[in-house]
Image 1 (cartoon, helix red, strand yellow):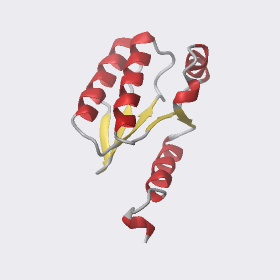
Image 2 (cartoon, rainbow, N blue to C red; image 1 turned 120 degrees about the vertical axis):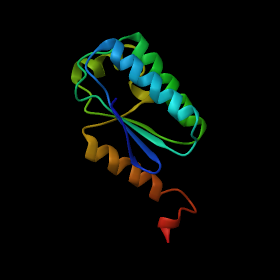
Image 3 (spheres, rainbow, N blue to C red; image 1 turned 90 degrees about the vertical axis):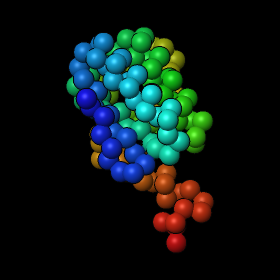
Length: 122
């Protein structure tokens, strides 16, 4: 399984390369997130060359679950072919894409620090 808890409020998911395995992994993440309202999610596409409609559907569900709780979904290391699928489907603008895991972690940290009343602001 490619799901890792990086921090208390962050789930890091390293997707497998296969289509059905990707769908299964994303379903598991959706189930996990639906039971929690306190986490951001980073999905690492390093091993993924292409995604299908089931994968996109699961990503949209995940995005909606997170958005309901004002949390983030960040996609990292997405190859050009896969990004093109998001563009053609008209979905590139609703997902946050970053180059790598370090950038994804920095994006999450930056958002945490900009939340009003966050103890790290003091």
